Image 1 (cartoon, rainbow, N blue to C red):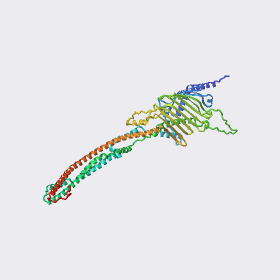
Image 2: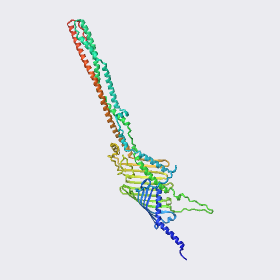
Image 3: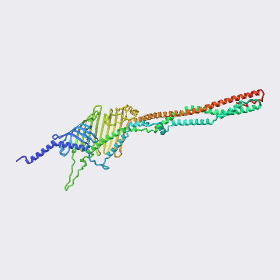
Image 4: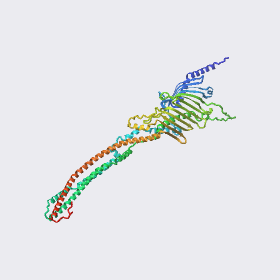
Length: 636
């Protein structure tokens, strides 16, 4: 009797051999492909694995050089891991349970540089119908749009330059058309008044016909000069002629007085002209203010600069964290498959099945402990790296079967820099709650990805302390963070291409003495109240006040330029009008002076003649040749 039947042994041996050949030569290859496919499905980017090694005698798995691409950055890796190693319990495998007591993850890095694209071949995207997009996704997308819009509205240093450019085409005439310069109008109106007076003087002078008066007086004077007193009738005739001459003299004296009054008015006008412009400086100041108010001086929303500067970064970081928290929620749902499927009692013809709960049952997946080590450095990173280590406990498909939450804690400390990441994923309660806490101290602020703008300090040499807390409870998401940055530097000698050099002065005034800032940020996406986004900083108030000073300084510079132009225009107008007025005045004076001389000469001659003839009459009276003439009859 044969102990082994050939018909059974040979086929069995062949099957076993084929299985061994498959596991020895092909199993690792197909397992590697399975890992890559699963990773690319989960992360939406290329996953690369250098090698997968399995050992069936120890039920261990070793995976080398894992690179998971970042779907949002074509040439960066989301995760870069040197090695993953673990062993699987044998007995639970017999009941389709994957239980790992310890797993090691060595050389963990993130955001490292790739040499090739991580994009996957395009797939036909299934368009989400209205209502299919989750409340969190929809609200987060709105928050991103808002943050991007606010950052795009962030004012650049060119806005300061607009203040100076308002004067590019400045000209006195354009200013008059634009604002109506009171000071120039005052000068023009004043000289209009002066020239009006001069015209009235000319008309008065032209209306005075001096020569006929002089001719009449000369004729009468000649007649009186030739008169001799021989008879009483001669005295009477002489007396009449002297009275007529005296009347003509008075008329000529009145003409002299009128001309002299014009001459006096001219002198007074010249004196008044020196004082009539005492109010011009005040009018110029009013003109400057009026013109400055017409200029389109740009306004900057400096009061919310922290929101514009950090808002987009904060929302982007929150969106990234929320994405992975939702990914964790997807693969670690509130209820496991075992909990969702309720045991059904089957009715039978005879009796019934009674299902008894099984105690100490294991979940389909349980990784009890994962030890992790890695670095914050890696290819494509220039900042000082920190090595860290930590653990993740109880990754499982059913926390209630093991009675423990999933927790993790990672920390790194190189004296100058500290980093820690901890969290808990709770599925023991009816409402799932996930929490992540991130803390870093002394880190390079450049790692935050704060954009360099043209008039903000440099963050390249600055250090940052950050505490961020993220919580997803049910469908409600909240996040809050506190950021402190110190060691900010600003190059006061910085020059801006295409911008007036004076702008450096304004920017320097804005940031002078500010070498640190604090930022408080929070965001809430709640079903009951929707989106709540807040971001404040201690620099908002400081910069708001300083910009007010800068604007005043900028406007002051503008006003000085305007003042210079107005003064120049005013002085030019004064000189032009003064020259014209002086010419007109000189012309009037040249016409008055000869007339006054002729009149004065004639008046003096008449006075002498009257005196002479009065003396002759007195002599005749004294000698009693004729009756005496009453005293006062002939008056000068």
